[in-house]
Length: 182
Image (cartoon, rainbow, N blue to C red; front, side, top):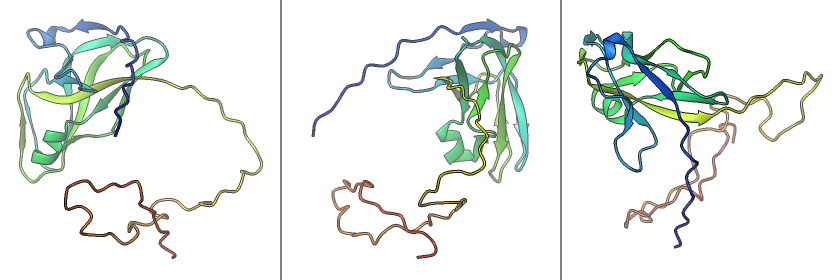
């Protein structure tokens, strides 16, 4: 099996302004060489009760270059261990926004969740933006899926060979989904 290396895109420069409530906090940063997102920390301490949400201050504002956005994404460990996620995921910070970056955290767990100032609460992922325009038409072209939406392709896959994963090498490449009407 060959491994193909893809050269990463050149980093873009994002100007960042530390706000008064961000004093002493680390700026967003990658936690490892392979990290896709930069960890961002809370600039305030608070408790998020089960079933509630809060826009958590980060203590900074940014100037994102035109043609880019920064996506706000949840941290997997917070989601798995505590039921804490970001709403509106991925959240988009537009290139013309200059206010304080806030992270909308929601507690989907059963216990109160304590956020302490300086805790890593989310990830920021810069991304290029593809602009578009709409062309109004009278009809759309036909497809095999048609107007089937939300769950129309079904949940179950073709029968699974339970013995194939003995070495932990099972692949999803051969999965064919079934429509729920089949």
